[in-house]
Amino acid sequence: MISCIIIDDEPLALELLEDFISKISFLDLIASCSNGFEATNILHNQKIDLIFTDIEMPNFSGIDIIKSLEYKPHFIFTTAYSHYAVEGFNLNAIDYLVKPIPFHRFLKAATRALNVINEKEETTKTIEKPTSEPEYLFVKSEYENIKINVNEIKYIEGLKDYIKIYTSNQKPILTLSSLKKFEEKLGKNNFIRVHKSFIVSIPHIHSVQRNRIIIDKKWIPIGTSYKNEFIKRIDC
View 1 (cartoon, rainbow, N blue to C red):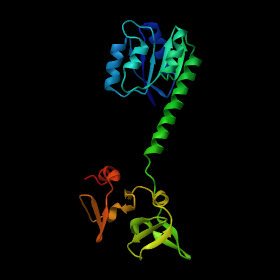
View 2: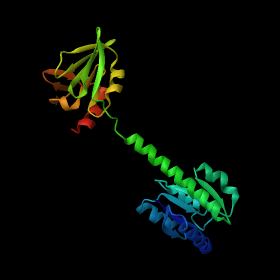
View 3: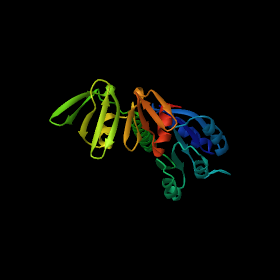
View 4: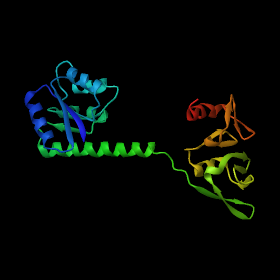
């Protein structure tokens, strides 16, 4: 459901848009406003997904309203004047409807808004979705491929063209790879790069002392460029 408001100083225009919105199942009309001041009070106090606004209104135009908002919902201009179209689209309007507005044209604009909002939400979910970590990895060491349980990895040390993987249940494993490539395989839920030469498993950290991490009896340095992100992750 898309929450929306109408802004128009003409009562008949408000009534028409209210009627149109009532016929569209995915639109939820929160308020009809006869001026920009009334609308901005609502917009500053309530999350609105979509604005339908006229442009030429006394004191506070529709373009002024959009420009004044710090958080900008999606918006569609509904106006009797076509010459504002270029400026409207430069402000990233979803659509520009010229009065008198037929219902089929209003429905097309509303559907476009629905698609844009849904696409944005899906993109946000994808970005926020945590990277999953594999249960195990196979790494090549000398003449064999060794299976390593990811939750047993304590830390990884970079050694030029090789990396050395330290685990709970095996002796350190040396394999031809880079820290960057191995970091991509691990995921980032439990692992973090703390130095140009080290990745550590957060669950295996025993303690943090100033600029170093202690895992077992190993002291692992925290690089200056990695420190802020590390502190955020462990929430010190």
